[in-house]
Image (cartoon, rainbow over all chains, first blue to last red; front, side, top):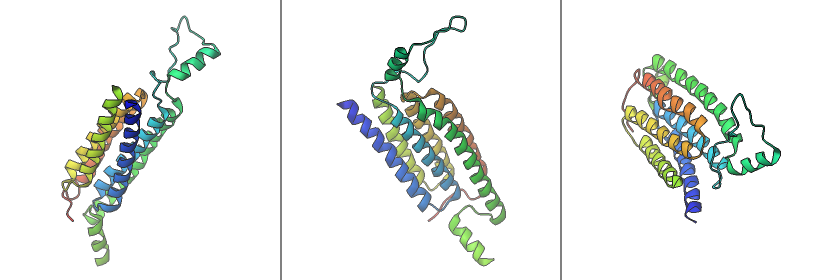
Length: 136
Length: 81
């Protein structure tokens, strides 16, 4: 009972973090703060996907405890199905390892664009950038 | 018991996100974004994803904070309005 309440509470907290970070990206004028909130948005989405792959009965990471290198253990089909009831879902974790690296590449692209902007106009506030470009 | 730790970490991540939004000093909000990634790393450890934890701490806490502070050092530090 208490575990189910905590389970839905964690999902609610992660969803509220996604909502607040979208609000912050839309409302704050500073470009560095927009980038920080963009990374928070991506991280909250990753944690939400990992949260969906977890089940309350799972107790081990998705790595089969095989034998040693000299004496490998080849599991039978029923052993694999028994293991899959105790481990977490490996598919979201495999996808999110790729997504973290791609998110880093997108973040570095945004940072380089912001660096070009601040070298050209001397300001990081997007409201002040509009005044500068209107003046010429 | 580990779910209680995870719920606490998710709540503190939400609190630090709200503090990032309403902070006027942008350097302090960059550091708060790093704190938020530490709490999400705790959530990932509870959800049995240690391979994600290794990549996530190195990128989210180290590299993102360094790049954001480098960009911030060229512009103004305080946000008004």
